[in-house]
Image (cartoon, rainbow, N blue to C red; front, side, top):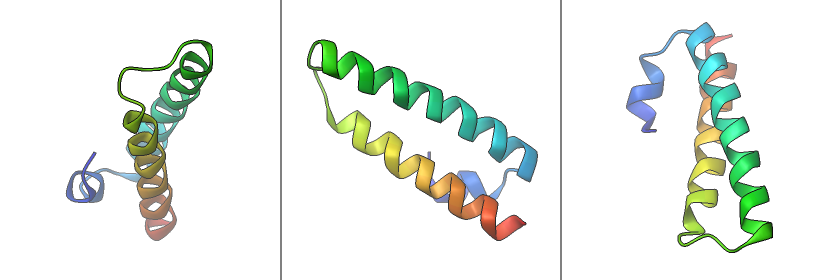
Length: 61
């Protein structure tokens, strides 16, 4: 998710998106431990998305 897309969301939408991305991150991390993912860079991208969402949520509050 791009920074420009996140700026257009409201605080409630950011929190909902954050919960979804965190759940997706934990599932992907567990799947990678069981059997290696084809593209492990996706884990890094999700971690960065979580950071972007947290930053924007802090700015809005």
